[in-house]
Image (tube, rainbow, N blue to C red):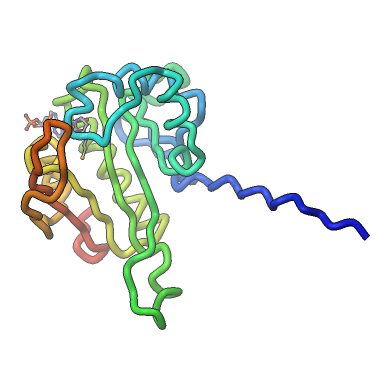
Length: 202
Ligand SMILES: CC(C)(COP(=O)(O)OP(=O)(O)OC[C@H]1O[C@@H](n2cnc3c(N)ncnc32)[C@H](O)[C@@H]1OP(=O)(O)O)[C@@H](O)C(=O)NCCC(=O)NCCS
């Protein structure tokens, strides 16, 4: 009798954004490996990286990071315009999560929360594109995914990011003092924002 020693292949995670979303000026779609080099053009910039976890120093390293299946599934590409030639102007994060719950309630808490994150090509900053995209993702989170809470976090010094959270109606819930270590060597404050489905004003 032969024994099959092969390990079952890990299932490729399916994209959190299940369909293309169009807003007045933008197209939002799930990322594919073909978005690697385009997103690298702005991801590698020092100004973009100031508040991010970081970016590998070379394109090969970035390819490995960007093409990680979990990451790809939770990356939303933002394009300016609605046709095939629409340029990529940003990549956002849309992650579905389980809320914390006591043991007896873990099933009911599964997938009830989403976390958003964002990176916009600085060439397209200051025109409300990120605001437009985040509003569309909030709608997707509440209407399509049916989550009850959406959260986002950033360094307190990243004004552009928390101002965006406030523009779309998110509430500041936490201000943690000297919580996270920035690459400057300084422990910096972070802020956490959230929006509940019943607080959302489309
Ligand atoms: C965070 C980030 C996405 C914000 O970008 P942004 O350009 O400020 O956001 P928007 O595209 O929504 O544009 C808003 C600005 O355009 C202006 N604006 C112009 N037209 C607008 C419109 N139709 N609607 C809304 N705002 C508009 C707003 O007044 C605002 O300007 P202000 O900051 O001077 O008040 C961007 O700074 C970024 O990618 N940073 C680097 C990566 C990063 O730090 N990510 C977050 C990590 S936690």
